[in-house]
Image (cartoon, rainbow over all chains, first blue to last red; front, side, top):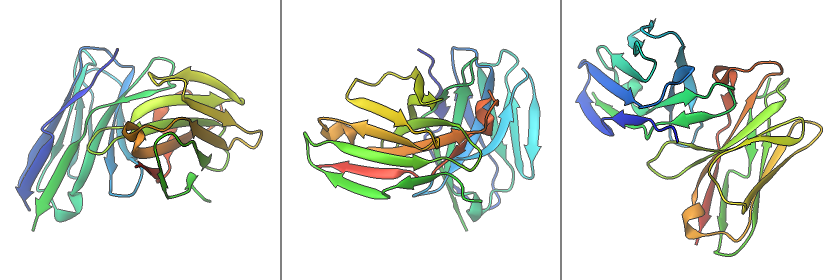
Length: 111
Length: 115
């Protein structure tokens, strides 16, 4: 069974601070995705990383895929209150049929 | 263009009852997946439907069953409800011929409460 562990589970920071969320697994995934979920809504895709060592940037968000394609990180620079939400990582199986999600990191950015 | 829609939004049932949740995929999408998200946890894959057949299934008991219709919409049925079935049930759809999960879109979910 493939498992993804996210850390930390909860994070409360002040506006302007930097933060990093980690997603680790003992399994190799064909790709890894990061989602953000607001209360009462479904997850919304932020980015997909495919190649080991790949780094992608989305404005103040930087995503990295580990060399062995087993782990990933999400770094947010100068966090804003609008970044508040549940951040989920998910690994894709080789067939592209199912996603294995981590437990999520609930981020609160206080003004 | 409407995205993935789900109904109902909220549902309250009692233990032992049966429930049916519905999903309409995004226009042009033909593959539908269902996920269960318990409070404070990440979503867990239940199953995926393609061409009206279950293509892959996660670690869920037979009480969870599904169906896909010719118009690609889908239903999730749960029999003999347990308190632990209380969760947000998410539907996700994907476009034809696309094998990568990063092209799928999630609906807003149905919040099921079992009393």
